[in-house]
Length: 265
Image (cartoon, rainbow, N blue to C red):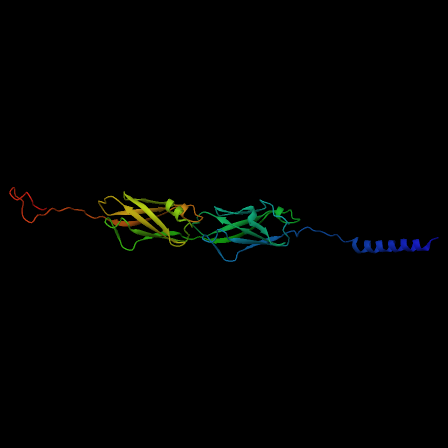
């Protein structure tokens, strides 16, 4: 009998037995824990003014994210106008996903933004979707109109009105701002030019050809097209003082038939 062959078979048998004893009773599972949780964080508190292009990090505990986060497995709700594009969701690690938001709208009161992460985004997890909320502070936007001196009927033509925006920013294009501005309240007043001074200030130069019989307000309506990521118009008024125009005729001496020729009025 060939003892070398027996010895080799015996060695293999012993090795297999050792492996069976070592690993045979162990079960290797790649499933997630039964109850994973999720938290949301941002670099600075979210406000209505900073919501657009903010990045929210969704951190998973007790599980890992899938290698590819499919569209629809992460959603956002709670504030109208808040959305994100599928390419703005980035898996930065096994437990962290970032979501860059877009926002065009208005919030009247402080509220919560809700993130929902479906089971399809979590490896080996088949339970209920996970939700987390993050607070968003509302801002009371305003628009103020000012001039270097009070406006009158006589000074209206060529006057410059400064529109100052609070809580929002003007669009980067002065042409978009000019197209979005409407003037009413006094016939004959129009916009001659618009100069964007800063994110919050724009100068509007007026033209006027007409007559104002009584003191009246001039109304500026600044449409949403003049403001970044906003969906409502602002209205502001400036008082205009009417001027009582008159014409007087005088002569050096009373006119008579005899001195009428050559008289100067």
